Length: 202
Image (cartoon, rainbow, N blue to C red):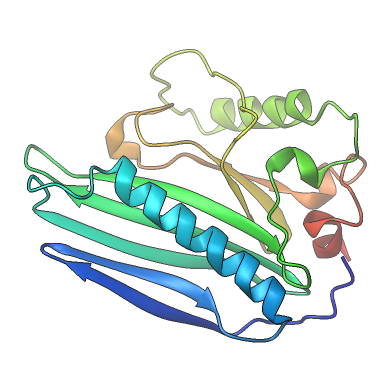
């Protein structure tokens, strides 16, 4: 990760169908065509998976809205969240969220474990921090804290790694998505300095 790419131009494509409007971000320059293609393919696949997980296509869908949030777009790191809201009747709709973090120079997409030095027990370290936050914020857990998973959702924002869980997973629906921001400086000894978090530290 050499951080040659500073900021990527992001544009929006909109997919529409009956009761459905999904805005999809795409990278329109700022890096090689191959890297753009890798990132845009991954974003497209994640968007389609979210729609499918929400039941698309289905005549039960009364409303589907897809949006996105750019969390980091600097120093050769692109981190974003895709959100998909669906309403099929009942008391309230449901929102799913997926996040993607890329090396803008290569288009490589990162899983949580790939942000850390090989062989470190990053899970127990992050779990301790999250459990402390649960306690200090007095979050009303629905059950015992399950710990982070191999395919744990996260994004990078400013100088923080933000871990989050789906609706209903940890806390009641009314609390929304539970987010746990962790400063890179709190975990800098286990971060892979050549990865996206390492880039954000300096």
